[in-house]
Image (cartoon, rainbow, N blue to C red; front, side, top):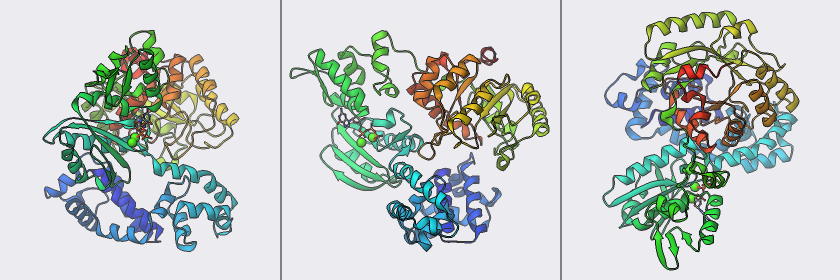
Length: 569
Ligand code: DGT
Ligand code: CA
Ligand code: CA
């Protein structure tokens, strides 16, 4: 069992207990434990089964240690299962509404007896929420405005969750006797930031083999439909998955077809028709004769097309790119040499400077920037000028004690609501690397948001805008900004743009990153790590960059540190 799964159990317990009005200390204990577990590098499950003493971990006492053992050994938590029966799942869905936490949900459930998003919407429309003690018209309006996001969020999962599930299942299917090939398809293979459902293809002579295995797979809760070659199941996480079993000679054609996107496939079919050919999930056909289908390369080649990387298959630029010559070579995870956004224990990170540097080095990175928060982010213990200067001295000490990785003295500096920087210019001037970000006041009118961004872009010490829109995937819209105007100014003032790789952010998104590339703005893919495991998310940032069509030359942190420095102002 993965640490994140154990942590999720505790998070859910905390939510449910809080909704039931449980003791605040108890709730906090579960949340702290969840945080410790999800930020621990070592497998808690292995540690526990090998007889390790779990109370060695911060925030884990005897009682919690026992509960962890229970989860690890039974795959369940009895009290959690009990609580789930008492609180309908529709109540938990309410937690996905931006700005609504367990305390508000407790009122909706316990006092207003609302049990689903639909009931909550109806109550808000009827003005019932605004009349409730502690709530007002404003809260009610916010709920009505944001409830749609919760409905949609519950329908789509993040690419991180999609990949973890799909890759795990594909790996297990490939181990089965008789299974020749298996692959994820659909939006997950295209690395879209969210996925509606999962799609997996298998080639196997006996379709019962993969279907029986999937039905019994630990991720799967029930089989929804089953035919001769097609099966639809629901995973325990709630997401649904389509499995298709296809003959070997059609595997490439099926993979092409079911990878999509629909829009890409429409163009492919049209091009085939122009050549007097027909393409479907079984192959490419001239009349009745199959001329390709075993591999995707064959299918595209039969149509005179290159085998598009799945990330490009959205019918955006890929056909124009193909017509213009060989496809550009997209950036890969292995190309990334440095990570320029991360936190340490100086602000809200869980690792020390040395731990973060060692972890980055172990992953093959050649350089990093330590970029803790500035003082405005007080709940993250953000740094003022004097603490920051002290912190940089610490970084210099670590620099001297570690070889094989370079460490830049950086700062993630807030752009304040009044369009000034959170730290004075003379401090920013001393930094090797300054990320400017919006954290607060994201709902300000466009004019003020742009004024703030311009303040950062025109500041001579700002190197990059971090997570430029501030959106949270499926949870919060980004700030109201004019992206073209921002990118123009960034190009003029030689300010870079971040693709924040965290699957909750992916900010810039693929479309905006493609625009930044077009305008010649260097893009940096950063992890925003808060723990030594935080670097894991780099892959999602690279995927987003690939969807934007970025090559090594577009991504500044594929360069050596020396070449990277030449891009700085
Ligand atoms: P999702 O699941 O909403 O995140 O997006 P996809 O792209 O995974 O869509 P899905 O699961 O409905 O279908 C998987 C792929 O199968 C899709 O990308 C293209 C192909 N496909 C499905 N239905 C059709 C269709 O009606 N026409 C064509 N041309 N292709 C289809
Ligand atoms: Ca899908
Ligand atoms: Ca599907």
